[in-house]
Amino acid sequence: MRLSRYFLPVLRDVPKEAEIVSHRLMLRAGMIRQQASGLYSWLPLGYKVLMKVQRIIEEEQNRSGAIELLMPTIQSADLWRESGRYEAYGKEMLRIEDRHEREFLYGPTNEEMITDIFRAYVKSYKDLPLNLYHIQWKFRDEVRPRFGTMRSREFLMKDAYSFDLDKDRAVEAYERMFVAYLRTYARMGLTAIPMRADTGPIGGDLSHEFIILADTGESAVFCHRDLLDKPIPSKDLDFRGNLKPIIEDWTSLYAATEEMVDEAAFEAAVPEDKRVSARGIEVGHIFYFGTKYSEPMKASVTGPDGKEVTVHMGSYGIGLTRVVPAIIEASHDEAGIIWPVSVAPFEVELINLKAGDADTDAACDKLYGELAAAGLDVLFDDRDQPAGAKFATADLIGVPYQLILGPRGLKSGEAEIKHRKSGERETLPLAQAVERLK
Ligand code: ATP
Ligand code: MG
Ligand code: MG
Ligand code: MG
Image 1 (cartoon, rainbow, N blue to C red):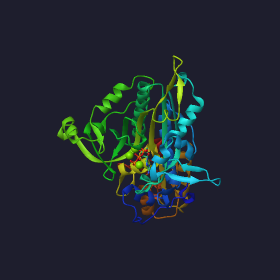
Image 2: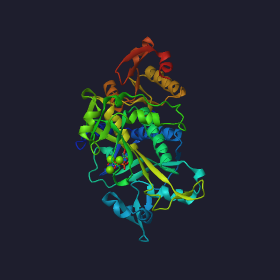
Image 3: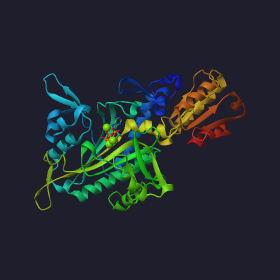
Image 4: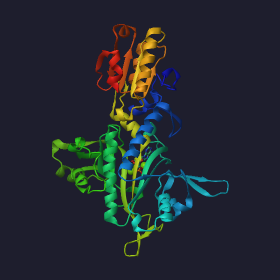
């Protein structure tokens, strides 16, 4: 992508409504634009990151055995009356009436709808286990939308729903998601700690929130320091095998959010030098809630003995539009964002230090073509602007590698690579630049 032809509305000034660093950087880097309170457009650069996050989530969900589908954003009120949540959900729900005065709502979550799909088609225990997920926009009329897309009203969520014959098997489905979540966040460069959590209005009795530590986090969290550098299960893990030892390993160390913490238990379980008491961001949440929806909505299958069995369910959310700012909270410096390679909007930013100089233009064009041919997604800063401004933009938008070429380098046949994260610079023969970045 040539920057001269791209749409990257970088802001010089920091909008004063932005209280936290990720919100400031997302606005400055031209990633998002607020359209109304809690409603955001994702501009091209932001959208690319969001889609990278989406891809990782899909890969890990699929690997764990979950199956992707897509449900609508608008749901009928009657469906929610079946579970009793239409009245119970309260003011966070956006209620809508159509021209026939029929009642609808903009979905804040999809337990009811997925249960309706399940009961329409699945009749036998032989079709279990089943885990269906989608990635779809949700709406919650938050009392206080803030911090940009960290807490917005419309937000993109991955929500998965598991169906099993009994509690033991439902817990195994929960464990598969637990492991898939560990892998998902790690691949995005995040250290997310599973913490025992309150089940809240969704209900149920087994629940973990996945928490990123950050000073700007909205909840107080308490955990054992060793959870911060625990190795992540490998991608070769067999999800059909017994995952209990992994879950045991992760949950035997103390970790709880403020709603669940018991100070005395925390102090008893964790030696003083290992105690982490910090702020955290909830980037995901998994629940097992038994028959809370399947019972009232009559989602059952015939069991092996021919008797009807009400299925046991769980639900598993990740806020994609919250994950993006969470990554920035965890990875930035004074100059801007530092994208982990896995979610970076571009892999390389090629910087022409002297656009307009025929030789440099030709050499950069050639490099650009070679990088593209090598399969790299490149942002080419070909604009006629001072080098300092280009460096500032490159550091702000945080592409992992900058490949820098100007007339002087060209004369000596050398280019420079700057690693955004370490700040390290290396000079290398032009001819080796593409090979080095591949
Ligand atoms: P919170 O405690 O932050 O209000 P929640 O517990 O209400 O979140 P869940 O119902 O558990 O949220 O939804 C699953 C995930 O969706 C959350 O873990 C979070 O990542 C994301 N999420 C929830 N509300 C928002 C929001 N307003 N904006 C962005 N992401 C959100
Ligand atoms: Mg909430
Ligand atoms: Mg919560
Ligand atoms: Mg939650």
